[in-house]
Image 1 (cartoon, rainbow, N blue to C red):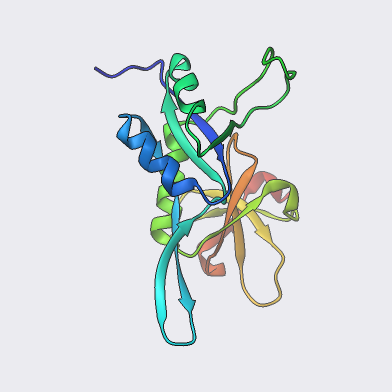
Image 2: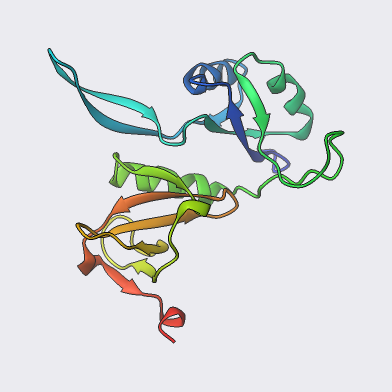
Length: 180
């Protein structure tokens, strides 16, 4: 029943196709995860809370290697995120995404539905912190310099991306190895 050969893959979608691709993957019986964040939109005549992808053009699917071809044929599919290798497909390395990574994304978006996504390369590397209170107790991240509030980037291992959230400073501890 449970197939431990299935692995999480990060999929880059066609523009604005995240929800449609997720629906098609679910219809195929594939385990997929589209992280959504809730935001408030103001129009001239109304205010509405909407859900939008937390990672623009990205979603995750748990697949067997032989299932990748059927996903690639879907019109909303862009490519599987990989590193290295050449255009002929040899030597590609797919990021290692664990169930715990997916659970961490879910936990962050549950606690902070407005969290923003930033790629790690855009982050300023400052103090490494650990959250010591609240629903995200134990999660680690980098404290981002901000004059008005305390923003923390929670690194998502293997994805080269982070979720940026605001955490009260009293909930944070500096990582012991980072104090040296």
